[in-house]
Amino acid sequence: MKLKPLKIGKFTAKLPIIQGGMAIRISTGRLAGAVAAMGGIGVIGASGMDFDELREEIRIARELAKGGIVGINIMFAAREFLGIVKTAIQEKIDIIFTGAGFSRDIFKLGLDSNTIIVPIVSSARLAQTAERLGASAVVVEGKEAGGHLGTDRSVKIIVPEVKAAVKIPVIGAGGMMSGQDIVDMLKLGADGVQLATRFVLSEECNAAKSYKEVYQRAKQGDVSIIQSPVGMPGSALKTAFVEKILKGEAPKPIGCDFCLKHCSLLYCIIQALLNAQQGDVEHGIVFSGENVWKIKDRTIKPAKEIIEELLSEVEAIE
Image 1 (tube, rainbow, N blue to C red):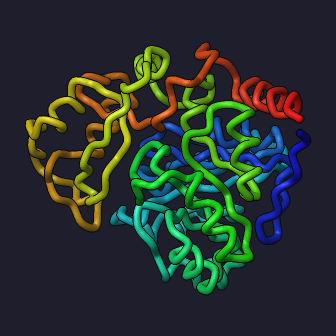
Image 2: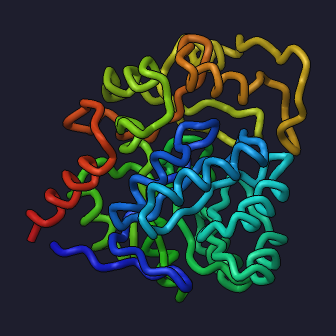
């Protein structure tokens, strides 16, 4: 099968592949730039960054992207949501992806600055709302995805529903680890795909070695659904800290930076994600899609090689 380009607003990606933005410095400028240089859309996970850090990561991505398309992902639940969005717009980011809640205000900012806005949705109804407000496309995420989840339904069910409900491009997200998975999603009607989990095992992914090793050891059944202080469920690989969350024994925060608009104070999710990103996985949360165990080759390699392998698998399919 030959992949078709993906047009989102004024941009056309050579490959209909978006590298999902992974927060707390898992996907930074290096990974986004590497994917963009290959003709996909590279995305910086902006949640957890301060404004100057985000500016620097966007500039790093631009330098590596060789003219490719670069975006950011920011979760609506973050207290600095609007500040991050405005900073990215000042840096002339190509696309802003937003999830973990739904913002109506962002569409006016996008319109005023001629910036492409792509929300992450989990229902046809929300996709229609996004289209009406001015979204250039929607990412449709199902229960198979990693991180914060907006549904317990499969992306394979939701994508056809959304495709029938809107005219803007529909990008399927969640659970895709191989070329066959990409082809299957496109055959369901998706105009493109978003992969995040698959890129954790890239050299450019900014996670610590021990974080990536959790992915390399993953077996079927190792991914759990945990409750996040954000107020949404999340999909994560089992660690000692995740086991405590599941038992209701996670330690309460000591002090608070008020990084979220609303927080249950069940535990400090930002600290847990940061611990894992820096290598302390036993005191951290390692977000992952539920099909991580299906990754066949779990060696750490350049993002370029991961994309080449996916394309080779796609092209071998009739």
